[in-house]
Amino acid sequence: MTSTTTDPVAEPGPAAPEPQAAGEPVHPLADAPDVLDAVAESVGMTVVQARRFSIETTARGFAAGYELELDAGDGSHENHTVYLESNPTTRERDGVLSFRDDESGERIAAWLYPNDPELPALAAAVYPEAARLLLGRLGLTPTALTVTIAAYRPGKRAVVRYVSPEFTVYLKVVRPGTAESLHARHELWRGAGVPAPRSLGWSNDGFIALDRVAGVEAGTVLTTLAPSAFLDAVDALTTQISAIESSSPARASLASRLPWYLDRLRPLLPGDGSDITAVGDAIERMRVGAPPTHPVTIHGDLHLGQIFVDPADPTRISGVLDIDTAGLGDPADDAAALYAHLVVTALHHDDHGEPRNAAHARALAGLARARWIARAAAPALTDPVSASPPPADPGFADRARAIAATHLLGHILGLGTHGGELLRAAADLVDESRQ
Image (tube, rainbow, N blue to C red; front, side, top):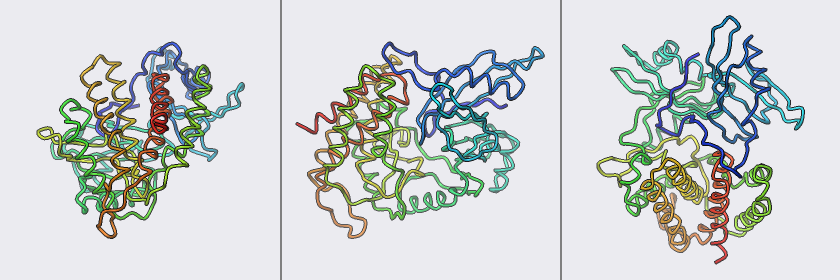
């Protein structure tokens, strides 16, 4: 089996989990020896050692990735990557093993990478010889080919980077039947002047080939981003996006998952149960009480990893990635996602002894949050129909606070660390709305 190599192009790839701090949540699937032993047994091997390298929330539960060293029984060892899903779909899926936890009754699904049951094109995309065939269908014939996994979200999407002397291409692997509409969206956005990657072709098997975008990921040049000028550029980008016609909704707002997050946070942070309930109640009151807005086209998952800038002029946005989450929605969703990601980015740099980056992320987050008040008081978007300034959006700040606080609660589940800090950050947002 080919090992996966990560290349931070669109979003973070698998990484080793941070050491668990005292009082931090213990995640489901964080320690699953019985299931891993059963997976090894299904291929006639035994587990020598296992290392969890990722865990994230899914639509129904969690997905955890493990690197396994297996004994084949003849003295030889093999390395495999396996993914476990809690509370998986009940649909029959090829190559998926199903288990049930005797104590909790929870169902667990397991499958070997790259045989992702929701992304059937992934297995062909990650092997060089099979990748050559895929590229040949798009009229691309490399004389040599290096294959790198740029990003991977199990069951959702993957980005595979192909480098040859003739070209560099990114193959985005998606669920079957969605590639054609994603290709059309890339064409539409580029026609509207938004610097999304150029689509080189697509297949209903579940992939779209994308050209590389100019510039560098904004998060890699964090300390060069002048906060006010960079956020001006982001505002200009979201205004430009808002004017693009959309006929379908954006990815569902994380605010809609608040009850799901709360139910899973309480057992993970048992000492903070009352605070979790209080924050959740305040978020819901704020969300329901905030005046609604006219839906416009939004990105749906905007953060530093999706934004590329010109390294010579970081105030100029040169690319925007992962527009498959885009559609009609609340502009406060993009503002909230960016803010929450900046808060988590600061904690990441704290953990890695990078105080300048951490301070810069916090400065950006603070300024971005301060702009929510101005957005609520004065027009910020252009109505895509009349091209005239819309009325002020008085509910913007409270909607952004509620959505951002929900994002922060979700990050507790995904990170496995900083639970107390992120809970306090969420509480600070809802407290601000009362002032």
